[in-house]
Length: 215
Image 1 (cartoon, rainbow, N blue to C red):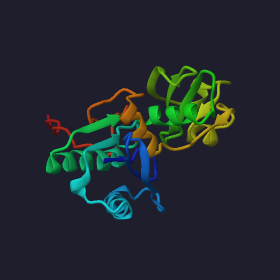
Image 2 (image 1 turned 135 degrees about the vertical axis):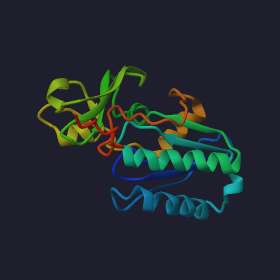
Image 3 (image 1 turned 120 degrees about the vertical axis):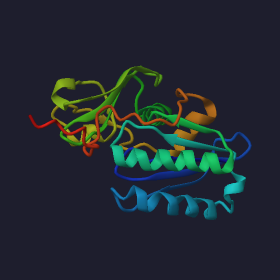
Image 4 (image 1 turned 135 degrees about the horizontal axis):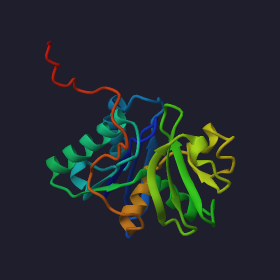
């Protein structure tokens, strides 16, 4: 049984996959409150296991979205993934969260031509990557101002809804789904990564450097 979660957006997504082919979505849950990753991820995992009638000992692997996304949210997800993998002695697989959105959009028929995935990066910016019609990533991920990456291509993700003037062709899902992350892992339809964060920029809070000498 594969446990997967994504904390790259303001909400938390958790899913359990299993079944004969390993890609059956047994449970998928999304947090009701936003921007509270640290408080909601662990309870959602326990809730998902309970709904599936399973325990942590039934897990065979861990999957996690590596972003890009805000520093705090990604840190919660990645630390949890690494900790569970260590304690339970399980493999852990990372997937770019934008790739999961692309896979969902292509598989569900939301797009059938080259497209862009753009998500909210705050600071009036977007995280984005470009894909071909089959969902293979061509460029990115990167972070940019919407007006600098304006396009008439279809745009998957929340960015199109936030900046319709620059990204007018909104299609498909808005936020990464743990279930689709899981399918990407099971079928290896996205690059499988180490559980390291794709921050793309420095965090707002930083450790102060060495004080300058007073002359």
